[in-house]
Image (tube, rainbow, N blue to C red; front, top):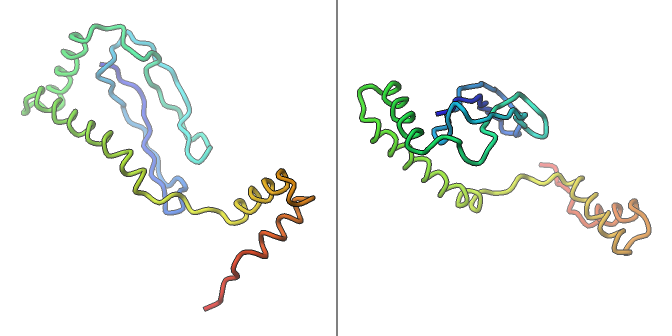
Length: 152
């Protein structure tokens, strides 16, 4: 078992970071002799802290040794429970989250589009295609196509 540093971040409705807390991130598939790397935790293209994780794709420790260390750790964390059952329940939960992730991604709406940024990208494309001589001309055309907001 290898303990590294993780960071949990919560965001507000606008997607901006609201709160952050570090915690001990436990890797059962790695052991104490495995190398660790440090990297920045990014939120909205801004580094908010440092996390650590195993460097290699696979541990230098034999899997039986890792399993014993995991079961020993679980036994100390949950002394009144069977460590094998706790490990299996955790694996069930983690496996289910991995199965749900692509489904959630497909069902979730994408981020709202910033209208000005979208117009600028489209204008650049229109100029590159030779449809307009300048970026300004393309932007004027695109803005004229958009419906105007009506005040309530």
